[in-house]
Structures are given as C-alpha cells and as structure tokens.
Length: 400
Image 1 (cartoon, rainbow, N blue to C red):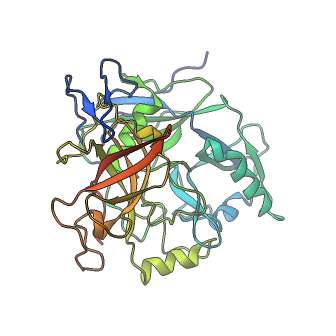
Image 2: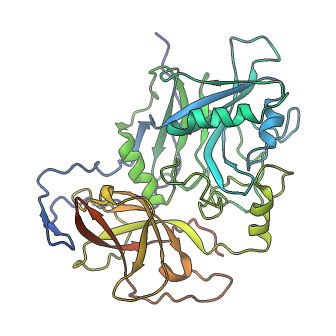
Image 3: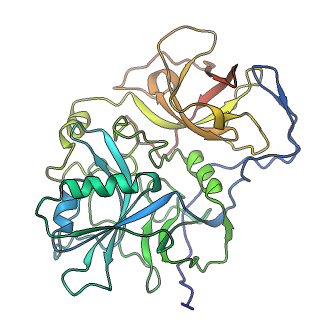
C-alpha cells in the first residue's frame, strides 16, 4: 500500500457564513404548495475545514516536447517555456476559447511527467476539465495538434482522483486580488509533500487547494470528508462557476464568467485562439453582465439581507431549467439576467450588473434601486412555479 500523502495546512479564509439554523418554519411556494422540512435532500452546510473528491472532473495528459508551445497558443493564461525564470512550477487556472472568443472549457493545468516514458518525451501537462467534456476537449486538441510533437491521452477513471481541500479562518495568505494583467510566475512552489500534484485554488479567497492523487488515495489531513455537493455549495457561496453546466460552452464570455477576476486571463501574453475579442472587451468594451451568487426565496418571504445557505429550505431550485430568464418583480422591463444553477436556496446567475446590483458600469448608475426585487418563473410537471431571487456581489470582485 502506498504511504498517505501529507499536505500543508491551509491558510485561506471563508468569505460567507453558512446559515446553521436548526429549526426553520415550513416554506410556501408561489404556487402555495407547502413542503415538509422533516427530511431534506439538500447537502449539509460546508464544514470550516474539509475535503471532497470531485468526480465531476477528469484529466487529460499532454506529453512531449511541443506540449508547452501548443498550450501557449490555445489557452488564456501564459505558459512560458523552460528554462524561462517564469516557467510554471505548479498548477494554474485557465480557459480554452473558440475563435469567436467564447468559452469552450474552464480548466486547471498542472506540470506533469509521465514516469512510463523516456526522458524528453514524458514531460508535459495534466489538464483538469469537466468530466462531461473530457472526450470533446481531447478531440479538439487532437484536431488542432497538426504536426506538433506531443501525445494526448485521457486518463482512465480511478487512475488519478481530483480533490478539493480547504480550511477557513486562518488569514488571507495565498490569495490576492488578481490584477487584470495576469502573470505566470506568481504562484510559488506547490509546497506539497513528495508525489503531490496540485496547486492553490486562487479563483476566490478560501477556495483552498486542488490535489491530484493516485488511485483511490485520499488527502492525509485531519479534516472532515464531505461530498462534492457540499463543495458545490461552497462554490456557490463564493460566486465561483465551474464546468459547462454553469459556463455554457460556446456561449459564455470569459469576462462575464469572471475568468479575469479569478486569474485565468493574462492580457500581456501573445496570440492565442479567441484573443481578439477578449482583448477588445478588456481595452475598449465594458462588461455589463457577470456571474454572481444568488439567494432564492419564496414569493411571500422577506428579501434576504445576507448570502446564507439554509439546507432546510426545499424550494425546488434544482428543477429550474438552466438559463431561465430573471425578470423584475411587479415591474416591466428588459431581462435582468439568467438563472444558471442552484441547490437549496443558493445558486449562480448571469446578472445584468446595472439592473440587479448597485455596481456602476463605466461610472454610470443603472436602473437599480434599493428594495428592487426580481423573480424567476418556470413550468414543471405542467404547473407554473415562481421564486424571488437576489444577487450578491462578492467582496473579492474588482471594481469596474
């Protein structure tokens, strides 16, 4: 049996406090159907320190002398070649775009050496991607590989597991507000034990670390093991979207998806696929919509004042179709955004900033006023349903 892998304790904060109320009265839908709270299918609130296996993520190995050069031309982050002093020494966050600048896949990329290959041919990268998209991305890479000298291999399920490990309330070390300039050499060493492949998850404060461990091996930490659904709640509370169920393939723009705020775009690097629109949006355009965390609540409930998760609320948000429109409550006007996904009473929405928040777009106030409320309406099982929805701007978002 392989020895357990030890990793250093984390020192990243947790932005939002989960609602830990034990007794909450029953809730009513807009359809006036009452749901019991005696048994809740919602995941429990995230623990302050824990880890979760992310079965929704898969890995692709790129190995060979041209793997770095290829990646440099197709992803939004900078990948300097060795022996550059800024060469990557740990994993990092990035995105693949299409030629029109729309997002294909959000990924983490890790330096990797295949021990089964001879020297000079085993060096390369592991690409972590949405499991539903792993075959599609592998085919995309092979299609544009041309004569480049590297091999593409999708790792088998169980060959390496993807883990998220976090610990809250120990300061803000390891995360800083990302400048929109990006940079390749600012991560520092991974700092893990021997054999660890991973990196700090710098998409938002308190996201912890990303680890790739062989086989069924688990992180050797004195923390609570949780489910991926609990990890998903943490992401929603921090406003971090992940995977193509939340970042719609070939529709989402990287800035609207907060890839820039999360350190996934280097505006100083050279040409790459999709760069033209990305650079133009940065220098000349304005981002009017962004993915934000949202709280959903009943049509007769008071407007929430804080972003808090209550696993006792059975609102049926999992049944809301993806990209359901968000409209004004008791007012007419253009669409305020789209609902993307949710669990319990929290989720993510692509929100029009000047309509749903007090964020100033290009220094100009929008139509939002304190007390404005919004709603989502959908049909399920032949019955019309509705909930109110409120967006929150995470404190780690940069000002417009």
